[in-house]
Length: 329
Image 1 (cartoon, rainbow, N blue to C red):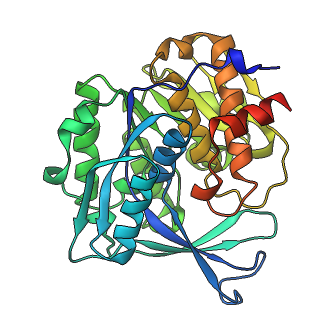
Image 2 (cartoon, rainbow, N blue to C red):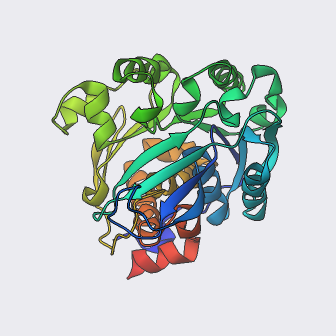
């Protein structure tokens, strides 16, 4: 059992999270279709923004880079980042486009279905010349997804940010965060998600994403390792209530999940990633030391589990003491 002294302290190095931030409209009743929902609550979201807040919630240091609409929702989201201690020098506002919205149905089992309003939304219009390159260069870790690869000009901004982060020696962390309804086709999604695969040092996929990217219905080591590339330091496959599998050049294994009363799975993966990055940012040798890596992944699993016990991602992201309570319970 991981005692709290096995877990490295949260690092102070800067983690820059790049991509989209939006508002999820979540039905007030679970287990109903969008059409049947009596009403909706607005919940700030967007995987890269969730990761940035997950990090600061644990006492870490993060910045968000992305574009919001110059509208009430956009300023509300920027305010939420600021309130949560996320650095905002990488945020720009678009006067012509709205902040993205997503209507989310919560099925009875806590899983989600999405309907997006982005035509185009502000996040899609981030241009390479609007990037705060100084901020990106000052990061120790640069984290990103794949939604920002879907359309120009955001795609070029993403590729430019990646290149600058790589040159500056950042650890590159990639969570594809597949949202099929946003892509023109499944083939295009697969092709673009894999187009930047070889650049990443750390990749996290869910079991569903593993099936999607490999075309296999087997969730086993052999299938996972088809996603391995020679420059990778850590490949993670998250398995929901079955925990997570980890693969490095020299070892691999599974870390068990924590069993909690799941209400809403939104943000669990982002919480897991944020916790992992916060714990390795100042000491990346953890990635080569299995006992220490296992302790960090156990901590990250606990963060993910706690996040599923409340509705909405950001309100549910845990503080360090919440996680230690679960680990020591």
